[in-house]
Length: 208
Image (cartoon, rainbow, N blue to C red; front, side, top):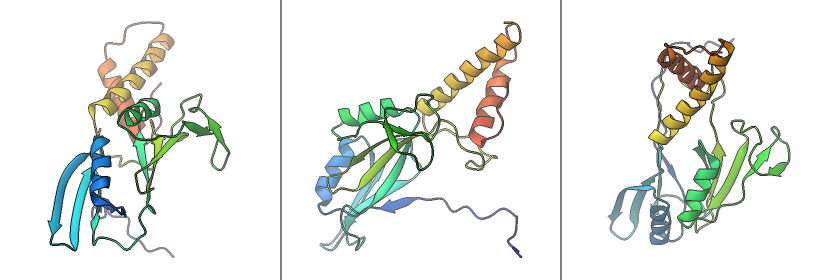
């Protein structure tokens, strides 16, 4: 019998992931070139050094340096969630990253197909790039979270770009809502937008 308590748990927020690199200064130039925020570079003598970068809009950061890990350089892999994979890919290429073509999958375990998902369904479109050591980063387009993947008590956006994308989706859905209402202007559209965006983030049924 599962006796796990259903009460609220203490927050365990992922703060940092360590990635193994062979040349710290080369890695620092690469991630700085991507536009990631340099939070610190802390050398301690000749045997320890930690560099921290944070991707734009991310609550979590990466560490690399000297004396941090015994893992082989290039053995790490991570996911980077984006709201518009075409725009993210273009920006990364403009910053010097060698990003693969965009692919999508019809479903879990299905073969890769060239191009983004034709319906722009969430979690279906991908692209990838490596840092100079071969550590891999997979871009995944996520516009709507699956149920249970979001804290329903919190509605938060990591950047103005993400918020703008949510507003555009709400606007498109609200336009269909007004059509179904005979084309009459909805004076309560701010409340409708708010309900739509909160429900979308929480993975709950969307208003119609």
